[in-house]
Amino acid sequence: MSEYWIDLRSDTVTEPDQAMRAAMAAAPVGDDVYGDDPTVNLLQETAAEMFGFEAGLFAPSGTQSNLIALLLHCARGDEYLVGQDAHTYKYEGGGAAVLGSIQPQPIANQPDGSIAVSDIAHYIKPDDMHFARSRLLALENTIGGKVLGQDYIAEATAFARSRGLATHLDGARICNAAVKQGISLRDAAVGFDSISVCLSKGLGAPVGSVLLGPKEFIERGKRWRKMLGGGMRQAGILAAAGLYALEHNVERLAEDHANAARLSMGLAEIEELQVATPQTNIFYVEVPPEAVDSLRAALLRERIRATVGQHTRLVTHINTTERDVDHVIAVFTSFFKDWRAAR
Ligand SMILES: *Cc1c(COP(=O)(O)O)cnc(C)c1O
Figure (cartoon, rainbow, N blue to C red):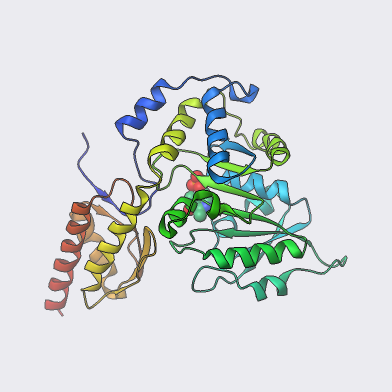
């Protein structure tokens, strides 16, 4: 057994538990490129049903399922409107531009994570040979741990549609948004033509994402997935983990949100820190620049991993316990007590 680490860098660090591993080991499989894998098929049907779409496509990563969606909605020389801080713009290696010749039109995110509808209106290009063709609005929920309001989503997607744009949601953490608001997954997905859902974030599966949309869209998506190298064979072993996660690990996200709230309240007691109030499982803490390096070292000595900087990101997940949270608070508190005394 490796030594115990508390890892607050991301909810991607989760490890499958014994029950998930048992589901993986027991999964019936087939060659999914032939459409023969019963577990992949079941995952795709289950996810489509849960989120209220006609069909689903299992992809090895969220990056790939978002890229497939962009390639389906936009052709060469088209553009998608997207938040400046959005994963599909900023954190996916420019894949839409590199592999799809799709131009992003990044737009500043508001402090609440939304893109102002007036900005969407402003950036949609008229039909003119000088411009790329505006085809798609891509939103993200949650974004930086923040939940987009249902009223905002309804307004933004209806506006996009009224201007002839399709809508895609990077729903890597859509389950966190739904659980936080106490609404169904279906309601959280309303308004979008397609959404991608990550299985390997807070849901705790080792890999994978599902892209959801209309049947004909998903059928065409299979060709892009194959071209991108995502046509997997006996993938039911992986899909079983995702299926297990959707069936067992959605409601429990509330525990991650409660742990984030507990952690933020504990840290807010430390006068040197400025602590944001988490809406879900991700929040940021402003750390005095002079304290960053020694704080990072102090946490590592206590076997705590975190993305420590002036703008420190903390993330709770299925492998974070309340006891872990209390330990982290104690380590921060003692660190800043010493730091203060030394100044
Ligand atoms: C993690 C993440 C993705 C990509 O998922 P991978 O499986 O890591 O490729 C996409 N969007 C958001 C918001 C994410 O957090």
